[in-house]
Image (cartoon, rainbow, N blue to C red; front, side, top):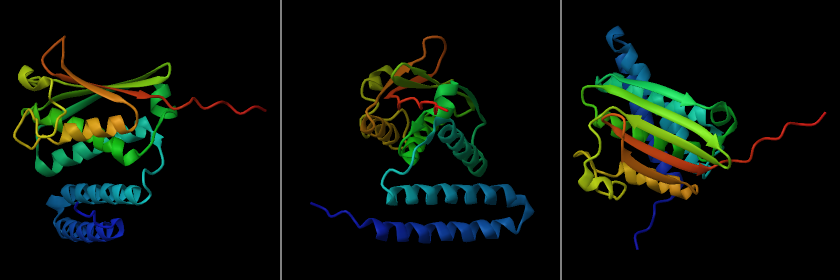
Length: 218
C-alpha cells in the first residue's frame, strides 16, 4: 500500500507554488496591459490558500450557500479572463432560506462541486452561453440545480457520467466523479439529465438541510 504524504509537507510544497505564482503576478502587474490578469492570478492564489487552510482544519467551517456560489462564479470569471475563454453568463435564483440561512459544511469542498459543474458546462459551450443555478429548500432537503445551454449529454454515456474516466470531452473525466464523491460524503445525491425544454444539460443535487436557526427569545 502506498503511503500518503504527510499533510504539513504537502501544504509547505503548495505554499512554495503559491509564492511562485504571486511573484509571477507581481511581474505582470508592472505592465498596465496585464493588471487585470495579475489581479485574477492573485485572487486564485488566495482561493488556493483558503483550500489549503481548510484541508489543514479538516473540513473547515460552514458558509452560507450564497457565499460559496459567489466565490465559485468569481473563480470561473477569473478563469475566463486569464484564458480569454468564451463569454459565460450566469443566472442565479437562490431562495432566501438557502442563500443566507443554510450553511454548507466543508466550504472548500462545495466550491469544488460548483466549479467542476461550471467547468463541465463551459466545455459544452465553446462559443459561450448561459449557466443557470437554482437553489431552494423543501422541508428537510436543499435542492441545487445547475443547467447550461450547451449541446447536452450523449445518451451512450449518460448512465455512466459520474464514473472516473467518463467524460463528454477529452479533458480527463474526473471532475464529475469528484462532484459525486463530495455530494455523497455529505449525505446527498446527484443526478444528470438532458434538459427537456431546450438543448443543454441539467445537474441536480439533493442534500439534507441543516436545522433551521431558532430565533432567540427575549
